[in-house]
Image (cartoon, rainbow, N blue to C red; front, side, top):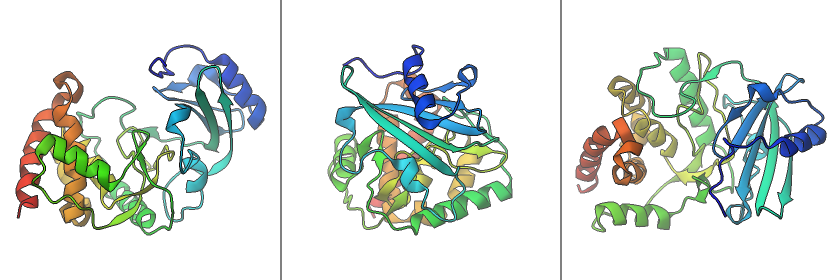
Length: 278
């Protein structure tokens, strides 16, 4: 099957089916296209996110993340209203559309690596910290899917062992609900709202803080703010393990992919390895 990329092609038939199923009209001229999703405003004053995944990537918990996240309390996130999903056997794809509240604030960095400090105020950081604390205290049986693959102890240990050697003790001693795709494309400003909940679920405690840290490394002051705000999570052994796990992708990817994250990630890896060897 060719690599899925919804940034190309019109997908008019899919969007027409979504309109018919949800009872809305979509503003196709304002579509925000990503590799595996298309987001559009509707005439109902809502936002509709349309996603496709290969059938092989939908197993276990399913992929109704936005719907199940609607039960979370105390998290700054869009309200969920309704959803629809269907199979497309001729392509081997499953499609899903979710209608949520419209968020007027814009993603801090819609795509690519953040290289400029967004200048977020104390209220913004407080909202994020409260939201992640509320999320971590929630009850769920879902398992987080990182890049559509469930996260597990075996995956964490195998990745760290492959990149950094198998001499480290990599047992995760605490698991907690996480957004699992917390980056600057899924956070808005000036109001702090967490977007795109399709991957949330149980993960090593501190995954979200670690994800935000590694995505901030090209802006030292911002990375330091993340460390300050989430020091307890990032400073725990599990937090360090999951940060090292995320760094593995950055330091092994081609330089043109990691870009300005590469050098600070290498410095962070040295710091983490020293701390974990104690």
